[in-house]
Length: 617
Image 1 (cartoon, helix red, strand yellow):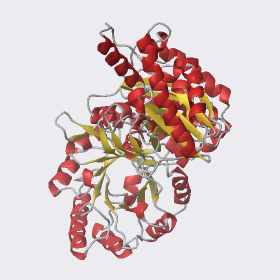
Image 2 (cartoon, helix red, strand yellow):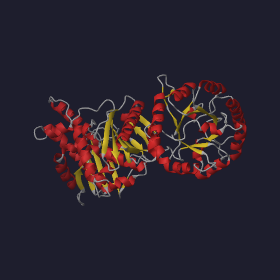
Image 3 (cartoon, one colour):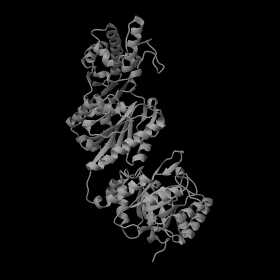
Image 4 (tube, one colour):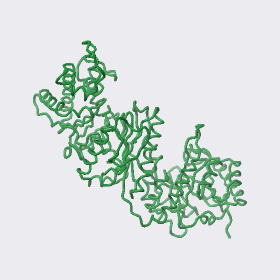
């Protein structure tokens, strides 16, 4: 016979043939929601935003009195921050452990303690662990995610085994369990041997990815925090999310050993008014697509993009795909190394750790990059610049931005600002730009600049006119002298900007993308002539328009996603014909739509509702 404090009692509650689900909670309502939703255990903490600390004695007593089935693991941690504890902090935690042990003796449900302590060099603090075990008096110990901060996970695991730890909560040393899946699988294999700690897999586990994690790691136990913001602004446990995760984990058990799924990624291209998403398979084909409008605030936009990712990920299982990563491209100043949007005025974002926030929301690796740089990478790999190692991709839409590829490598710049082609001074003493400079290229040749200058010139001549976009202006070149003049002056500025970048960077090819580039020969023929004239002593580089069109950003995002998942070898096997067919199909569909969908609507490529994407500076 076992007691509630006996190690066997915690493990034996669920049937061993299915994975156990543990939910991290910090209040009684969350505990009861987890129990109703079918969770097997809860980890009870306080101060979850600090990483979890010891809950009050009153909270522990109330939880143990209220639950009828779910096991309760109780955090013992004196404070947030690091895991190196002073003697006085250890005295407090030892007292907490003794109090929990006393409550466990009369509990009707399994009780455990969650603890972790490290030495200053990052190794397991064995004396602290031994002292807690003695104070716990037989209550089983789970070593928490301090484990992932140890310098050698395998050595740390063996240390925990020597010290009689029941289980270890870990994401395999990575930010998410998906990223640490290989290490988790190795630890899980070792855990099957006698006397070794169980492996509790945690780190952005969600309903849509739990089956894949179980399949990849062999996990017998998974852990997640399932909290959302309430109407009053505090965090509450989402019972629906818990239930969906429990159901997905249980459904995964019988198929995990036999089902081999095809890897896929999520690709998101964020614009000023909408975000377009796609589920892309290993061959580069779009299997599902969707779009959402950006929100009225940066926070709302972030929430909508996370929802778009979740919706697309949820659709993958229906067609046998395993989502392994996501790529997100955005306008603004982007630190791609850290996945941070330093500044994006149209989205209301400043220093937003976009990759980390979205990885936490969806439980897979996420890479973030500048939208135009990603589009340039796609054009170099599969589009108009394929085979070239020195490329300038200029996106000319509402604004003007560029992707610079030098000797096969994208150039970010010291402050992530490389490629601001639109703000090259192209007209000395010219008109003032919104950036504060004078004579910037995009003042003269961008969708917004052309429209503004046409309206201003018409007003000066007393001509009645209606607002006109770049496409309408091009259509009137032969019949409207004002349109012809504005276009010619814009081309002069563009040729000056491209001549400057040619002399500085020596590109092999210049690829023009974005909405204004759709003018075709009305743009290319006079621009080639002007560039040749500006480069008196050298040949002009080849100038062409984008092959991938408005889908270049999405294709670049998909490439990023496979790289984030450490599966970039798959993109090297993509066939340009598949990529181009998908781009043409989606561009044709997008052209038929008058406006982006206000909320996410997942469709097949032939029914995409994604709007045409203008280039953004």
